[in-house]
Image 1 (cartoon, rainbow, N blue to C red):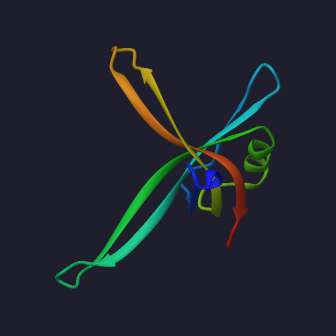
Image 2: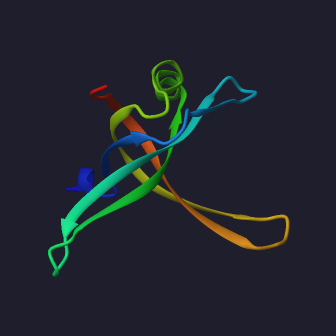
Length: 110
């Protein structure tokens, strides 16, 4: 059951082209986001559609795949784990960020 802890699977479309960062030590990071959609009918029978945005981070080989193949609008499936971090703005405000650390990517459809 340990393999089921902190595991995320999402299918969605890229909101923008990935941001690629090359670090001094030769490592590579890809930062990108995907949108997932949920559709349901409310009690009045109206169709409701919600879009959720997910921030994704990929490292090294996975980042190289992201850099080479992924563009805005591309539909992908990912598997990874949730990570949390905090930072402080220039104004001293503390911000909290939840991201998915991507382990695997599957390119879908279009």
